[in-house]
Length: 369
Image (cartoon, rainbow, N blue to C red):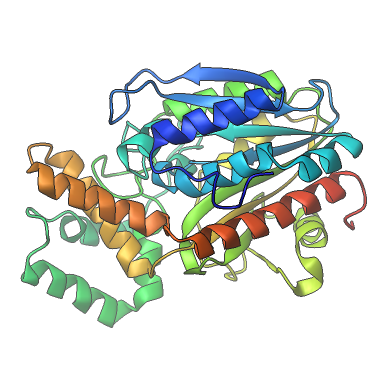
């Protein structure tokens, strides 16, 4: 086993090397789904998949990272640690549970220090039926010109206008309007797209390639950016289904010590959102009973997270920006989604490891209902 800190990498390129080396050293089956564009350093990008266990296992646990690219530093670190954790691997193996690691669902965002895909789309808002009318976020239209000012850093007038909005409506409302997703402004924040992204279609292919034998499937999707620093909120990630929610609470709730929150009852720090990634399970693996959570680790206050995303979107619209400003914006984004301290990394690994053990026990019938 490596130390909890050793699996974390400073760049996507290094994170990918560590993941592939760890999977290969563990004798796992590896498959790479290549992205069409290069990374920030000119490196090749891919959604890399490693299977630890039998290809025909009826119990499958998915552990995924970088749905929101820049959040991948955390998720990749957890995955690399797990690849070297023999006690964890033995626990899953003895329970007959295969573990499918999906490294860098959004490799472009991971490499380029963006939350969104190369299409400027929030992947976790992109799983819509695009033949039907898309959700309308009426509140976002008012904020859009303020969120993407003409200059960066924003002018004092722009900052004052944002502050007035928050003072009038409250921070939770501001967070909800900005982050719930919108489908009208292609250059805007939390844009859900008007068609499936590369990451959407590739993930669906991965699920078809690796999930067809499963009869019971669990999914832990690793995220950062919401909540108290280092605390992993366990957010119910499925349809609004009371039976599925109770099963998730039985598996991961720890008898109330690690509560399962939900966007459906307002208990989560996440705003209610639509077009979420986990919905692909019901399309691509309809034969499997599904139970899932998003494990969301806190970093910095939500205002700082939103401002970091504003800067990243501004930079995408202004590639001519001075190099020093580009580097500063990317540093702020990285800091918003990854806390570069040993204490934070250790907290992340301990909580993820517990959740993975609990998932295996749940799939094996030892974790409650």
